[in-house]
Image 1 (cartoon, rainbow, N blue to C red):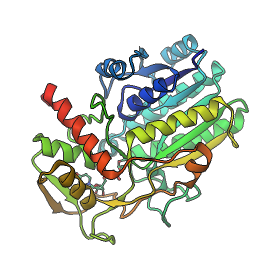
Image 2 (cartoon, rainbow, N blue to C red):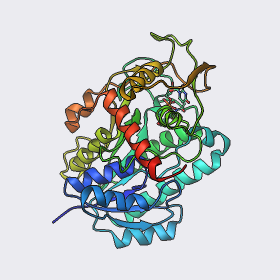
Image 3 (spheres, rainbow, N blue to C red):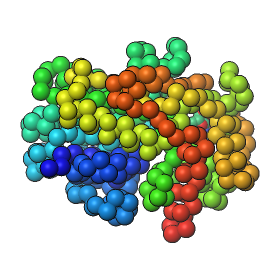
Image 4 (spheres, rainbow, N blue to C red):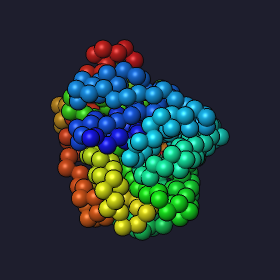
Length: 344
Ligand code: UD1
């Protein structure tokens, strides 16, 4: 019999790619999503890719009663992967309470429901933002966390602290927090990908939207950083590689292979690429010129972030396989395919 996994935020960017990988690895998936930053069209697209339509529950996880009810119905789930959260850094600076409410109320409701229903596995969608400005590179999981620059980032740090306390108090519960570096790319089918609402904050969607003609020009935020070409360095990771790591984390929990009740893994490639590397790769892959201009620094950006990836390799048996060119060409295919049928 298939093992059931609940995926909150399963219609979103990383969530939808993870749902596809779970289904392809023979898990039964139930999606809980409020569609606040996604569309139910994604469910049909997941079905097109996998041949299986996941169960979908439209639910606001800030609503404690509704959350309890939904978890009660699906209390045979083996584990929960929690993607449901707001994620726009700039918006979180403008509306901190909206972020603390949404990201933390929903987390607490989900964790309470899991305890109540004796579901014993939880996987959390965290971020390298919890490392702040790192003191040493590459960043290992042992690097100290710092208060992130944005309320969004702080919800990730606080969520990990909540989880740490909870796991110490509940011997039946096991959790894994996955700290993503910079997820980009899209599924090879071109049917699912990143779809930011409004003006993108992140580099990759800004590049593809500029190339497709929705944005006029990419602003490169600073070329006076202490890096090889002066632009900041990040560890870009293909979303499908990232999704596969979630399946391995679920396997680890379901098979009770954890060495500690709360484990944390970095998910990156271990390679650092500058903003100009990304632009150059985009121009090479698409054989076109990108309209961009160097401008001033963006507040909160750090010069360099890239992951030490040994722990995920050793414990999860996971290594990211896709190259920067593959990431970029899949982002571009998705953008083009999506815009062919959707105007904006
Ligand atoms: C950002 C968030 C991080 C979050 C992650 C999600 C900040 C400070 N950090 O990471 O908390 O987890 O997104 O994916 O916002 N860039 C440009 N022009 C643009 C956009 C970006 O030059 O229009 C540059 C940035 O200066 C940066 C690099 O591209 O050097 C990557 O930026 P971005 O994609 O926004 O990711 P991060 O800032 O690393």
